[in-house]
Image (cartoon, rainbow, N blue to C red; front, side, top):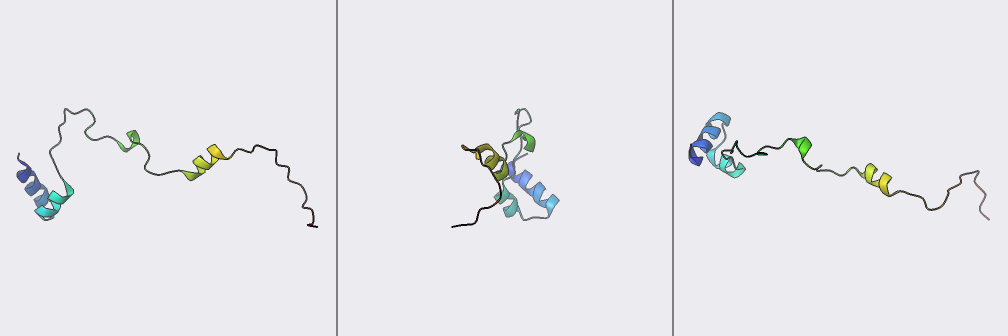
Length: 73
């Protein structure tokens, strides 16, 4: 199957224009390649969990004692 045949088949199956299929970059996969389509769980996260980052860096150097508020003088 040539690239043109693949693009035509995908365009016919999806109803998209062949130019749109080319723009999206469909290609024939080599199934012998070990990780040709990695699962999302095997990839690094694409977002930052700011709560986790904050937990890792929020360490007090001094003991914080919370008691009744004193009036300002």
